[in-house]
Image (cartoon, rainbow, N blue to C red; front, side, top):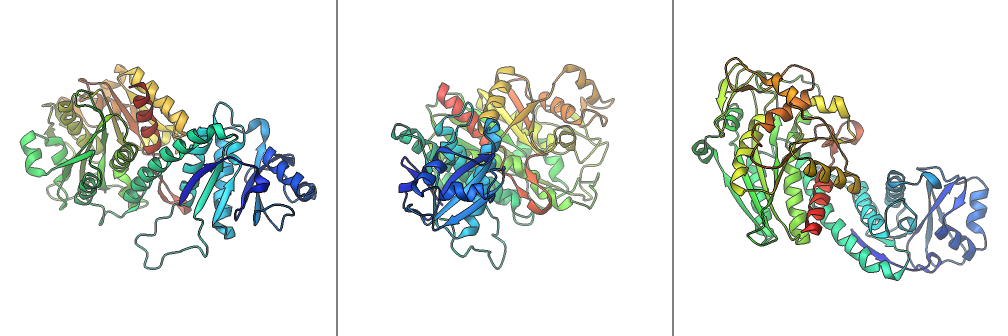
Length: 498
C-alpha cells in the first residue's frame, strides 16, 4: 500500500474515488460542499433525500456525480461536528478504509484529514489516518493454503492537507506512519503465529534477521549454557518443563553516539503458556500463543527505530521460553535463585512471566540505561481492572510514567497508571524465601509489578501490563500490535528532547 499527501480542490481530483465527510444532521463538510457546488447540488439532493444522515459509521458510495473528475465519491458519516474528536476521526477513517476495500477503487483521495480535530494539526491527522487505514486493511493469512485476495485491491491512499505550506509536515507524517506500521505489522505477525512455529528459537532468528536487515541494529542470542553461567535460575526454572530451548535475545539499536545512555525495552517472550503445573483451563488456552506479545512489541519497535533512523540508542532484551507441564517443571513450593541473588518461592507456576522478566531486568543493568520499560502480558487481574481499552502502567519514576502517559494520549495507544505503593509489597512475603512469586487474589496487577520492582532498583523503570490489550478474541481474534505505537511515540518524544 502506498500513502502520500497533496493539497488541492476535491472537484479537480482525477482519482478512482474522492472521500469527504458529512456531519449530523446532513451537514456537509467543506470538501463535500465544494463537490456539491461543482455538481450543481447533486450531493445535497442525495443527502436531503435521506440516504445519508451523517451518523458516525455511515457510508454512501456515489457514482456518476456530475461535473467532477473522479469516478466515485464516498460520503462518510462523521457524527456530530462538535463531538468530532480523535476517536470519531479514527472511526471515520476506519469506515472509509472498510468501504474502499469493498468498492473496487484502486486509489482514493481522502479529505477526512482536512476535518478539524480539537488540539490536533494536519500532520497528526495524516499520520493517524495512515495508521488507521493500515490497521483496517491488515490481514493474517500466512498459513492459509488459499488466500482471500480482493478482486481489485486498494493500492494507494492520498490524504489531503489544507494548504501547500503543510505538505512537508504531511510527508514527514507519512514517513513516520509507514515506519510504525511496519513495526506494528511485525508485532502482529509474530503474535498471530502459532506456538509450534513461533518458538523461542524462531523469535531469536527474527531478531538476527533484523540485525542483517539494518546496519544500525546488532543482535546477540544467549542460550541455556550462557544463562546458567550468569546465574539466571529464575528464568531457567520456567524453561525446565519444555523441550524448546530458552533464549535471551539482546538487540542494540545504535542511532546516537556511544556516550548516550540507551533506553531499554524488556519484552516478555513466553511463546506458549500452559500455566505449567498450575495448568490453565482448556477453554481459550490456544490464545496463550499471545503470551509473547511483549517480545513482539520490542522487535517491532526496534524495527521502526531503524526505519526512521531515530537519533537514540535503544536496547531490546527479550527473555523467551515456553511454560509447560513436565516432570522437570517448576512445582508449587519450589524455591529458585534469581540472577540478582534474591530467592523466590514459586507458589503458582502460572505466574511465570515475572520469573523470566526479573532476570532480564537484572541483565539490563549492564547497559546503564537512561530508562527501562518492560512490556508483558502479565496478569489477568489487569484485564479485570482495565478491560481491553488501556494498558496498565506502573513504575518507580514519575517523570518516566508521565512521558509514557503523554505518548499514549498522542498515539491513541493509551495507558492508565495504577498505584505502586509499598503497602502492597507485604503481599509477597514468604516464610521460606526472600519473596513469593504471587500474593493473594487482590490487586494482582499491582503485586506483580511490586515483584518486578525488586529487580529494578538501579534504574528508572516502568512496567506496561498489556494482558488486556495485546490481542482481541472472538470473531476479530488476532494480535493488535500494541503497544508499538505508544513506545514509538515515547521514543520520538525522547528524540525530540535530545
